[in-house]
Image 1 (cartoon, rainbow, N blue to C red):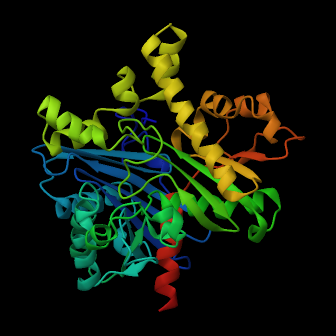
Image 2 (cartoon, rainbow, N blue to C red):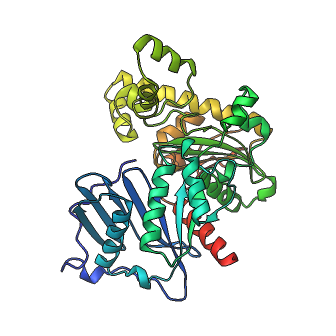
Length: 425
């Protein structure tokens, strides 16, 4: 889902916004600054982990380009910024400036840790780690498994450590939740020597979100987590599914990279690996060309020219056949994973939708589960159609399988893991 345009929002410090000053972190409650670095962006959020209060959040965009932009929201206050952002160190200086603009001085924000999202932890890291030079270098080395993500994360870590050198920095890995996948689900049927030498296995992704949701569901249902079998569907521009038995992952849809699995905004998801060879031989495409095609020019965007589901729904309503087929392909793949995971679990107690599409697109939820009453899955149409930002059950009262919508909160999960590690030292 795209963010609303807020370029006309009042700027902190102006007459319109001065009386809407944001809450200032209390000296009694430690906060965590959560950083999510992309190759050309840096998202940030200041969180109080215990209660979950968000004091401020924002993004620095177009990092490394001649002219960058940034914005911050803090309560009802908002401040934009534009100027050159040559690297992630400068991006962090912009972050500090933005906090000052909305009246929150980072040096006085009681920051106990800086938590960094890292996509790939490989087989080395199954838990959060306090960053020292060795950890930093290991994250960089694992960039060979996630070149689009880990190198950017390291750039963000370096920039943040330079600007906030006296605060512990913690890396939290997207792959950590799936590091203990059963051997049968993490192992590809690839030549063992080759797989071992080049560390080829299924690592998964979005693990922080899947773990957060899997931990929320038992409390919502009033069930014991140690006896709950659930499917979590993280449906955003990137999309993934997981099967969780008794709190531990049994399977997940993403593999060596985030390309495998469900159809996504611009990624193919599952595809015959020979497509790479075919396009090289028949179309003369280089490996880099094919990688770009499969990761950035395919999925819903490649099928119908759109990746925002609001646009796709509108196009379907106007009779767009490409949009209708794209939706059919998306739903077909989703239902295949739901079915296979139900069998892998042996029993299904709950299905939970989360992330931008999962939380907001009732049509996707309805179509994914329609006609499954024979399997004990029955949606309540009114509950499904109702819009809410709250965690909720949307299945009918007589549904044997509970169906839920639970907003994900990866930043809060990262903040809690980072603070927990720092306080445990």
